[in-house]
Image 1 (cartoon, rainbow, N blue to C red):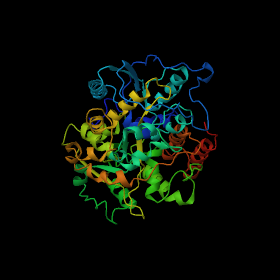
Image 2 (image 1 turned 180 degrees about the horizontal axis):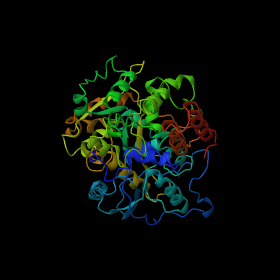
Image 3 (image 1 turned 90 degrees about the vertical axis):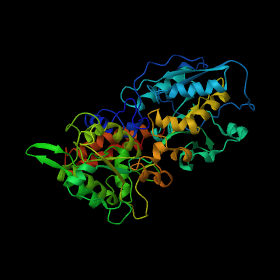
Length: 484
C-alpha cells in the first residue's frame, strides 16, 4: 500500500493455496510481505562460535546484553547495517536513512534487503543464521505477531532498551498502548512499534453487488448484524449461470488469523488462553466451525483454492467476488486494486459484535530492534527512534507499503480520515483482543500447521468431524512440542 498496497503483496489466497498443497505458509503475514531483494552482505559484527549456527537457536531464559554506559551523541564515524524485508522496493527506507544522516552527518547506514520470495517468514531462519555467524546487522525486526520475537528474546539476539528509554526520557505514550505493550517480554522492553492493526476484523463488500441484489446491510453496531445475517447475505450475493460462477459470495480468511476472528465472533478461540491447547473440536467452538463448513461445503459460495488465480483483491476489483474477509489493511489494498468503478465499489464493515460488546479481532503488530551484538547500540537505538516517530510511521504507511496504525498522531492524517471505509476500524485499535502466543513459542510452526491441516476441513476432503479432528490433532502436536 502507499499504505494502500505493498510493492508486491503475497495474498492470503496464495497462502491458502500453498496450505492446500501442503506447503508451508502463514496467511497472517500476507499484507506485510515485501518484494524479493538481493542477498544481504556480511557485517562487521563480532563472530559467533560455529557450533551456535543453528537456524533456530534454543534457550529458555533471556540473555542480557552487556551493560552500556550512559551514551551521548558521538562524533566518531559510525556505520550501521540495517537488515530488513520491510518497505523494500519503495522510497521509504532511503527516506529514513536520509533523515538519520541529516541529523548525524558523521554516520552511515547500509541497507541490506533480506529476500523473501514467498512470505516474510522466510526471513527469520536467515536472520538466526546470520546472528549465529556474527553477520546480522545493527537494526533488525523480530516481530511479536510473527511469533519470532518470543524466540529471539530468549536467544539473547535483541538488546533491551529500558536504559536508553530512561536516559533519553522517551515518552512511550506517543504510541497506542496495546502496540507498546507488545514490545515488552520477560520484564524488559526490546523494541519500538513498527506496523500494527487489529487483524481480520472486517468484511469488505462490493457495494454495487449489494445494490444489484437489493440488499441493505444492517448497521454493524446493531443487534441486527449477526453471523447468521452475514451468511444469509453472502449466500444471496453468490451468482452462477449454468456451471459458470459469475461471482462468489465471499472470500474467507481460512488460515489462523481469519479463523481466530470467526471463533471469537462466537465468544471463543482456536487456542486456549495459556497457549497450550488447541480448541478446534471443543464443544464451544462448533458454532463457529459449522458456520465455516456451511458456507464452504453446504452453501458452496466461498472462493476456495483452485477456483481462481491471483490475489483476492484482484478478484474483488474485477467483480468476481462480492465480499472479502479482511481488515483495515484490506481497505487500502482493495482501493488500490479497483481500476474500473463500474465493476466494484467498496463498503467496509466490522464483524458482528460479541456478547461482551466487542467486535471480534486479533491484535497484530511489529517491532524495530537493536542487535545485542551491535558495536554501536546507542546509535542503532537512535535510528529506530526515527523509524518509529510520527514521520517515520506516517511514511511507513503512505509510501512504505505497510499498515502502521500504531500512533494516534498519524491517524488524524487525511490519508486515513479521507477514507470513509477506514473509519469502522479505528475503534478496534484500542479494543482489539490480543493474540494468544503459543506457550512453547512455536508460533510459526503453529500457524503453518494450522494452515495446512485446516485446509482439509474447508475443502471438504473428508467429513466435518474427521477433518476437524485431524486439524485438532496436528495443531495440538505442535503445541505439545518443547520450547525452542
